[in-house]
Image 1 (tube, rainbow, N blue to C red):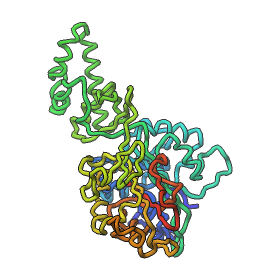
Image 2 (image 1 turned 90 degrees about the horizontal axis):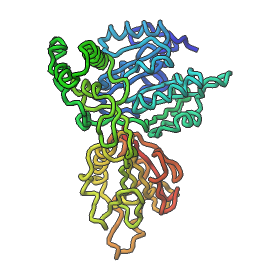
Image 3 (image 1 turned 45 degrees about the vertical axis):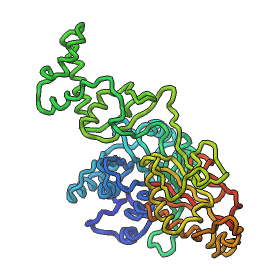
Image 4 (image 1 turned 30 degrees about the vertical axis):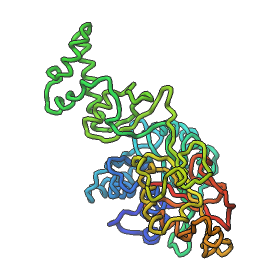
Length: 471
């Protein structure tokens, strides 16, 4: 086994014989990032934060920064690996941070993250530390990416690398993506790897200006502090003094100084906990931290909702549904006055959780399918799922092979299949708009429940099932 301090090869360093093999492999270093981490990340991560746990010398941190993440942080306990990583970062002009700490001890000091990555490291936690860590992580990160491999511990007290065990660890999360092991043929340094992506159910990231604060007088306070105005001369200090008449000057000063410490801490370290809001978006706890985030110009903010209406209604679409309407879905079809050619203009960008389409795209021209894929990509949330069920005209065992349903429709119905659908062409369509694409069957799905599944026209080999997950 490779020593931890030299686990990652860094460009510009002297390469060992093993490094030369791994740098051209899809299972190590940049190959691992490209094949098992990057597919889960959004195309444009501007304004987002990524944390890489067990980052070693920081190769993934550099790649995340190059991809466009604004805030990138790595954690590793190996002092030599961190020393190498910091020297390499400074040599290459990177801005990311590397913290030398054991993974299980630093979570409270890490900022809220859009993505937290565990690439072949979670099984170095004891099971007790791992479960404690996940309890905290579900209110610290929007998405968690776990890359795992074949790893057997002699002692059962360690977290498991097994996929089924990982899914059990994340039972309180939504699984939004899975990458199966890749072919090893011809790879210079093959290994068995899988990757899973989970979304927290406890926090959301929403527009900062959508929150309602009960302390609007904070707006100018931070600007005055940055200008060097003594806090006793700020408008906010004097505003508080005017209605806290029973407070002594010492108490008022201590209270204001604590607000200043919050200001400096959030500026330096980011938001460490979500803002607690009511279901109507009124801030219940965190007005000052919200004020700092707003002052710093952050467009979005992490929140945790509480109150009577904390379960947000998911928007799910059943498109081209005909008579097969689904409960809990917006059922759209030409019989209701909606056509694929109309697009989904009634839905905002990133507002839809899931879409299911069964035997409807086959009636569009190929160019119309391509155009509609862009509309699906627009309206789905990151992590949202599109499930497509169509005739498999690519399969010689299907009775629609190379013909579609053209021969099956009575002429009086006045409709013919316009394009020949199949898993290969549909994969190309979905990948063209940057979806992670997964071949599934009538009994499997990457959505959190089974509501997207439709199989009115039998299963394989006549039909195919495919899903795309928005990155």
